[in-house]
Figure (cartoon, helix red, strand yellow):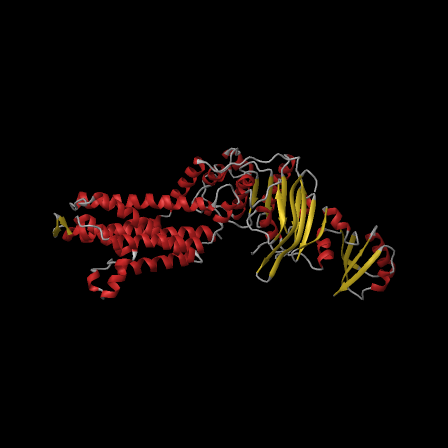
Amino acid sequence: MTGIPLPAVHRPGPRSWLELLICELKMVVRDTAGLIVPIGLPMLILVMSASSAGRQEIANGRTALDVYVLPLVFTMILATTGIINMPSFLAYYRRSGILRRLAVTPASPAMVLVAQVAVGVLQTSIGVAAAWALASLVFDANPPVHLAAAFGVLALATAAMYAVGMIVAALAPTPNSAVAIGLASFFAVGALGGMFGNRESLPDALAAIGESLPFGASVQALSAAWTGAAVQPVHLISLTAAILIGGAVSAALFRWE
Amino acid sequence: MSSSSAVEADGLHKRYGSTVAVDDVSLSIASGEVFGILGRNGAGKSTTVELIAGLRRADRGTVRVLGLDPWQDRARLRQVLGVQLQSSHLHSALTVTELVRLFRAFYRDPLGTDELIESVGLTDSRSVRFERLSGGQQQRLSIALTLAGRPRVVILDELTTGLDPEARRHMWSTVASLRDSGVTALLVSHAMEEIERLCDRVALLDAGRVVALDSPSGLISRVGFSRRVTFRVAEAVPVGLLEKLDGVDQVRADNGRVVVEGRGDLLQTVSVALVRAGVVATETRSEQATLDDAFLALTGRRPDHHEDVSR
């Protein structure tokens, strides 16, 4: 092989990451229908329940809007993006051969995964910021008593929802089934976590399960941060467990093609 | 094992479950050569290419592309190997320009965005989203992305499948200009004309094995005849008469359609004999042996002639 000099090692640099990020962002923004559920649905719930809940004080000058509605709305934004949207993108990328196509370039298909997560985090941040702006400007919502705790829980819950989404992406054989499995998982953890009304009206066993699943745990922990109560360890443990289990399951089962 | 070979595959084996897809395939492609892999669907073409591209790992055997192991030296090789996969899609909502920009960003020394788009004739469609391009345009874009990093070796899997004749000729001239610039090309195809026109050498794969490896004309010369004359007759076919003629190797008759294979000025020989026997022949055609015939002679079956390739 003396006739041919060996090519130099060259891994994709910051510019390729940036290009990929921009491309993933454009894909998400141009998928208009995909933006309605994660941004529109939580906003709708906020608007429908905000005015009555805003007058009901619970503790520390915080109203039902602050303590119950906002944690639910924020959690819905994280869950819809992580559990429904992200897996459907990945399933589409896999089905259409995009991941395979990238695998023969210097880019690794794992870059797509990272870019999708980054865009998802951006999308949820925008969703949370928009919901917060609406709640505080129009409905006089109050900031959480423990601001740092609220941010910490939001970050942890985002990671937990993506971990659940990665399980969906790993298990779903087609883009359609990814949406179906994602929606079903979302409604399951949502219903048990209090999305359709008080968790107290659920049988005790179901309520307990719901509280230890990521959706319920996120709502409870955010709620505690808002009232100024201590965030219960069981909720943090359940969110962390979701991240670890999701990571392990998807690492074992995720297929690039 | 010449020092200038760009691709060396040695004793490749790959099985999926109980199916042996690739069975002891060895290839050596010289630097600057346009090398074809020909075979029916399921012959092991795509798997062979995937092993060479490092998309799959062989059960046994070794691959070197520009001296690199595609699996171990992935980062190094990807900069200089361009691969166009059969029927793969791209981000549906991104435009031609956006996709070209994205793929360029992966390489150290890429070709210019406009230059790439121009080279595959997509300048007028550069703001069109991938999902709104025609099949032929998508294929051309895919080629542009394959060439984005100035590859020294390209693998083109079913380059012109699904393209209209004009787009096909455009692709052929693209390959020809790649050859002129010294790029080594591995072409997978079941389009005989394409292989015959473009390739320096061809490996014919059947049931996961290389059954022949030669230049296109070398393969054709193995057919055993060089010319074929076909015609129709209304009356009884004079098979016995034709078989005795000088230069005739074989005569087949089917429902009044007669096929004579042989050598020399076969048309003249057959025509004179038919006139002498008072047989009226219609729809007479004379043709040279083609790669199709070589395929048949070497594998015992006709190649696939459908356009849609299902994996």
